Image 1 (cartoon, one colour):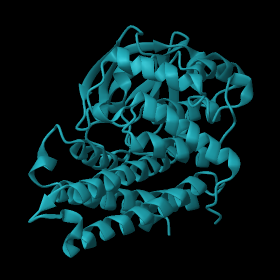
Image 2 (tube, helix red, strand yellow):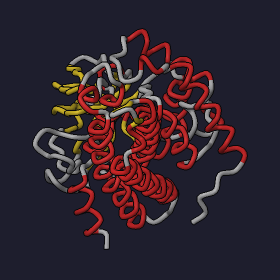
Image 3 (tube, helix red, strand yellow):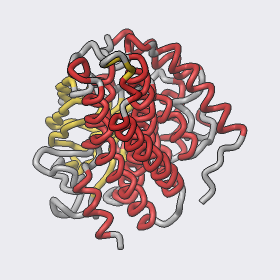
Length: 375
């Protein structure tokens, strides 16, 4: 595999870095955003074309791939940037792009690319853990429309989304892959109830209930009951982006920790002079290099045409991101001493984000089992 970046990649990374440094200053990273701040940052991000990164030019996109998504996610992770990029573009937008007809793509993707609309993928259900195929939400034909009933949980940025991409069962039994369909539902449609909540890392998610929601027949993506492969591909793309975000977060955490050890003194000498602490920093640096390599592997795997290879490599990267991310976060807090436990110290915000990334879209145990099944 060739991990080298070309000039276009470097330009994209530098542009994203400048954006993130300007929109997420040090003192605000990890803090709770107001809805107005969130929307202002989304508007600024849309101006530099990041929301349309993976879409085709005819809908306002720039036709880039998983490597470019990786570079953007790394810079967002470095500054704890929260703009629903992964939820709206990498997951939801990719599904519309993959499954939607020409008319559907023209209807929804320009708004997502320009940042005037936001989408969220409602796929998981209570009690199913990470087994997204275990879907009880039902959609049946009634009087010419689809009638949807069910409840989705942990919908990332679901309470700020205009569009909800809902994975519902139109045929088959509870745990079957066959029979799953994706519907585009307006978040303010009658019968839709969105219950938002804060997550550990000061971001937002939601539980969404559908009570006899009428969905027009032209709002189903692709053929009824045939959406499982596309949903899995979108989740893998988002997982790879999360691995890349973990790289940026861990990199910033290492930088902050080294700076602390160089400036903090004990017994008249900087903490960085103590060999045991140097060894701890070396362990973090080695883990970070492992994360970087596996994030590249995951990004390249997303672009492969073999679903089995993609699943194995993406899940391998997520196992490492979950395990090493937790280790790096906890080690950084310990190296900061008691101040690392305070909310005022930004190291804790980075550690929380790494912990949440480790649990999002499958934890280490779930992805390790998936790797074993892909052999």
